[in-house]
Image (cartoon, rainbow, N blue to C red; front, side, top):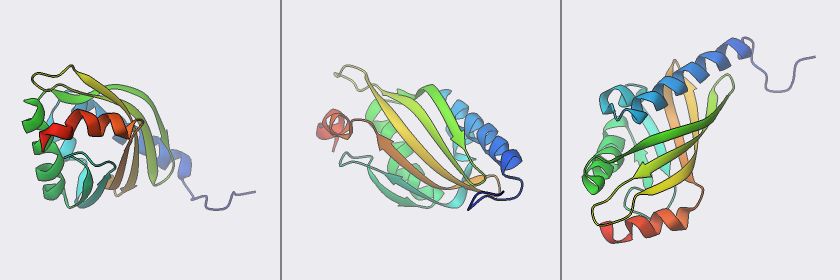
Length: 147
């Protein structure tokens, strides 16, 4: 019996998505921005939860680069990125990664946040992404004075 919503080829597609997300997170752990960004569809939509300067909804690869990647780099002097991947869970068109990100700002202690990252994947590209910090208030506080 096939479960509701199951897609033919799901195990193979899920395995491919696990490899894709693993390679994506590996690029970000090296802070290889070009490699990390290459996994996004041009029209990717990214939702970053919170009220801090990096939070918001970004429509398009360029908007996400300008609003999140470049801003995070400016706020931290480039000292930010993925430091640990606890697990990656996948299906035929989605993945969930449990990751730890680290940010370092001048004059502040380093800050680590546990992030639940949800990805929608089509044609081997990330087309939608949702980023949820475990403690959104702590992230808001860390970046409160960053404007």
